[in-house]
Every structure is written in structure tokens, then in C-alpha cells.
Image (cartoon, rainbow, N blue to C red; front, side):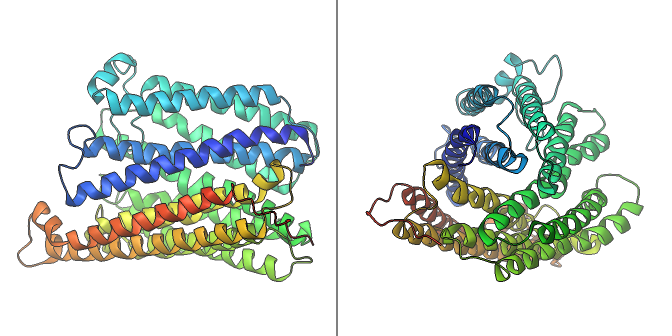
Length: 459
């Protein structure tokens, strides 16, 4: 650790992994409710489990992004963090807000929660992925602005690099586009039009910039490749990501009442969206192949390479499978969408956060990398989680194809719930894969506590 203030990243990383475990547990609960409808009912209804599952995903990734920024920016800027105390205070505020919100979902019915958190003053609740109460949304904005102030001031007083510039662009975009969560027009078409400005332009726009910056930082550290080479790749990738991601928002406008030209714009530019992810995969492997040194943290290198591959498969290939308007006409809202969502989030964002944690956590704990035994366990966790996610995606894809055929294409379409019974086998297989994923996550956690007297490998 070069700068003392980088230590503030540690609690953010710990909270991120803890919330990640919670997200997976609620995912397993929800997956079981697909096949055992009254499981944990009425204690945890399906809609509540789904809210907790998706909201925990967003919150823990934000913790990961913030921790990564607090670790990365001082080192890139060659200066201490502007205000470490502010960073620690924001951690506790964000953690408390997140915990209270999740408890609110679990302990209070949603209408009552809305009543007592100001939704009658400014109605923002009730929309998918943006279910957070008004007070929580305001808290997120306050935390985000204070965080951005801290990071921006650190960059301004120190060295400027392409990585910090791209990271700042992504982080500011994240905060700005979240403001549209406060805009809730009564017209349903307008509501959905601007709702995607948060949901899509986060995950298929500015988050991609954050991902690229984090991956570039780790690759510089573990390969020793010249910064100028990585900079060129980084600028190409983010240009492709912004052009395809922003205009590609149109693939969400097909069937909501927007003008018909969005079917062309959305189809064409969404079909181009796999390109930046493919470039990112080539970038990662190219940098590792051109490395000037063998870094002792083999696990971090594995996570970095896996990020490129899985992001390309999940966000690129599985996104392309159902992004063209004539195909999406049949697949929209089916389990094919869920398959894409699971692999895309895991490949693009979960893995890049784990990559930076895998690289930085040993350094924050006073060593260059974990012991060989710990790294072997961590690499086992990589393969367990990644293979499990591949099978989750394949089983959901199979369920989606059968669902589309029986419910939407067949000469005698079946009712929705009848179709759910027909695809239940795939739901069971998805649940088994989810359990294996949890085992992999537990192995990842255990790897941080392995002590075998084995000294870390050195270059």
C-alpha cells in the first residue's frame, strides 16, 4: 500500500462481499419459490425476495465501486485521498441506509413503507429496480455527491491519468443518471422512457467506463505493460461502449409506445454492443501475453481474464441473442432476458469488483498477495462460481426458449402459469447451480482466512 489513505477501501470491500452473500441467499430463496410457491410465505413473499435480491446487487456493487475508487485514485494520482474521514463517514451512512432499507422491505409491507418515507410528497416508489423509498434515494444522492467531491478533489490535486479520467466520467455519469429515478411521470410511456435512463444507461453505459478503468488499473499492476499501450486500448473501448450503449438504449423502446424508428436504431446499435466487450476480452489477454513480469497474485490475473470473457458472453453474446426487434417481439420479458441479465451482471460487474478486491485486499492487509494455498482455494472459487453461472444461464435460456414456444408461438398457446409448470425442471436445475455458486462464494470468503505458514510467492 503506497498511500495510507488507501486503507479506507478496506471496509467498503468487506461490506461489498458481505452484501454479496446476502444477495445470493435471497436469490436461492427466490429460485426455490419458483418451484415451491409457498416457500417462506408469508414471511418472505416472492416480490419482497426479488426486491431484496436486486437491490442488494446494486448496493454491493456500488460499495465495490466506491472502495475501488478509494484504493485506485490515490495511487494513480500519486497523492493521499482528499479527506479520508469523509470517506469513512460516508461508509457508515451508506451502510446504515442500505441496511434500514432492506429491513424495511422485510419487516413492513410496501404500502406502509411508502406512506412513512415521504412517497406521498414525491412519488418515486413502485418501479422495478427503483423500489427504494424516497429517503433512501435522497441518501444515495447525498452519499454519491460527497463521494464524488472527495474523489474529484483528489484527482485535481494530483497526477491525471487516463484511468482516473475514465473512472471519474463513469462515476459522475452514475450519479447524474440516477437523478432520473426521482422523475415519475403519470404517463406510462414517458415513465418507461426515462426509467431506462437510469437502468440501461447505468449498466450499458457509464458502468462500462468504471469497469474498463478498474480492469485497466489491475492489468497495469499485474503485467507491467507500458501505460501508453493500455491507454490506447482504454480509449477505444470506452468510445465503442458510449456510442453503442447510449444509442442502444433504443432496444428498450420497441414496445412501450415510442416512435417506430427506435426499432431500427435500437436493433442496429444494440447489435454493435458486443464489440466493446469483445475488445475488452482481447485487451485483457493481450496485456497478459505481453506482460513483463510474472505477478505473484495469480488469482487476481485469473479474475481479470475471466472478466473479459464472461462480460463478452453475458453482456455481448446473450444480449445480442434477443436484442433485434423481430426476435425481441417474441422473447421480450421471458426467461431469456433473465439468462442475459444473470451472466451479464456477473461477467461485467461482479467479476471486475472481485478482481480489484482480489488484487487490493492482500496489499491492504500488508502483503503482496495471499499464500499459495489461499490462492488455490480462491481459484477454485473462481471456477465454481463461473461454471455455476454458465449453467444458470444455460438453464434459464432453455426455460426461456420453451416458454416462448409454448406461450407465444405455438398454434395453441398455453397460459402463463401452465407454461411455468412445463419449465419447472429447468428451474430446479437453476437452483442446484445456484447452490454450487454459493459454495464457490463461500470458498472465496474462506480463502481470505487461510493461514498455512506458506510465504507468498515473489517475483
